[in-house]
Length: 90
Image (cartoon, rainbow, N blue to C red; front, side, top):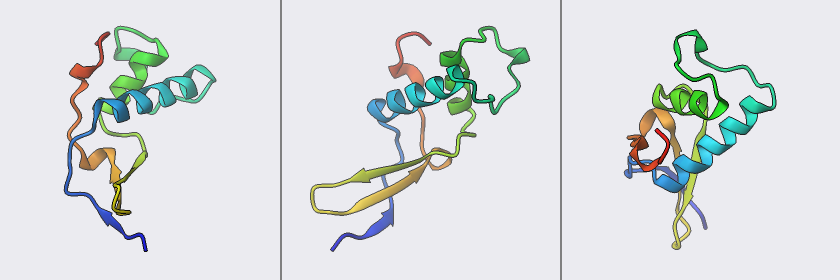
């Protein structure tokens, strides 16, 4: 039987980061409104807007991590450490 618990692991992996950036950049490019004021940003590209939204931890994203033993972890961006140095273009 699977249990759902909140994770003790508090770091966003680079794969999760890449997935979230790509997902949000696609939404923005298809016309979704940005969740931040983009007037102060240097670049208005959806990719950079998505990264800035993730840095500020305002995206309502829940990450589900599944372990081989069946345990599932539910994490939000607000609860995680986010290291964007894994992205090449930032």
